[in-house]
Length: 179
Ligand code: HEM
Image (tube, rainbow, N blue to C red; front, top):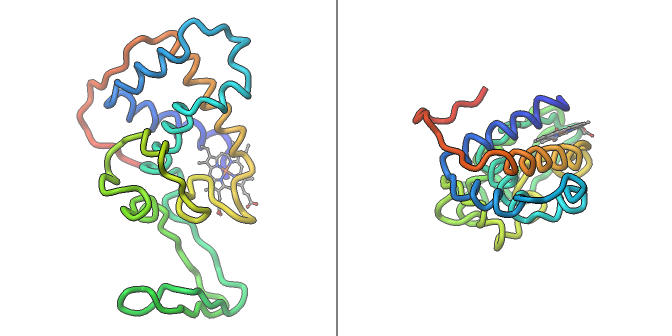
C-alpha cells in the first residue's frame, strides 16, 4: 500500500468535508489555538477525540480502499452470506476471488445509524464498531502497518492548520469524486 498518497488522500478528503461543515473546523481551532508546538506531542495528538472522530468519519465515508480482494487458499465456509436474507452459511471454494465492499460496509445503518450519508464526527462518541464493521485500515493479520504513522501525521497537520487558519469554507458545490 502506498505510504504517502494514502495519508494525503485522507487529509484532502477530511478538508473537503470540513470546508462544508465549518462548525468542526471552529472546534479544532478552539482546541489547538495558542498551543505551543511542543504541546503537540504524539500522545497529545492521539488523545484528541475531536481529531480521531473527524478522521474516522472521513474514512467511513470516503475510504481510501473502498474494495479489497482476496483469493481463497482453501475451501472456506463463511457463517453467513447465502440465502434470500444472506443469513445462511456460504461455501467459498478454493481459488475463488472474493471482493469485499467496504464502501457498503461503512454505510450499515445497524452499526452507524440511520443518517449514514451525513458527515457527523460525533457519532463516534457513541459508536463502538466491532472488529469487522469499520475497516478504514483493514483488520486482522493484514491490517495496515502504517496506521499509527498515518494518524499521527494527519493529526499534526490538522492541529497546525487549525492554529493558522481561522475559517474554512467551500467555494465549490460539486460532489466529492474519488479517483
Ligand atoms: C490514511 C492512510 C492509510 C490508509 C487508509 C491505509 C489503509 C490500509 C488498508 C485498508 C490496508 C489493508 C489492505 C488489505 O486488507 O489487503 C493497508 C495495508 C497496509 N498498509 Fe496502509 N493505509 C494507510 C497508510 C499507510 C502508511 C503511511 C503505511 C506505511 C508507512 C502503510 C503501510 C501498509 C502496509 C505495509 C500494509 C500491508 C499489511 C499486510 O498486508 O501485512 N499504510 N493499509
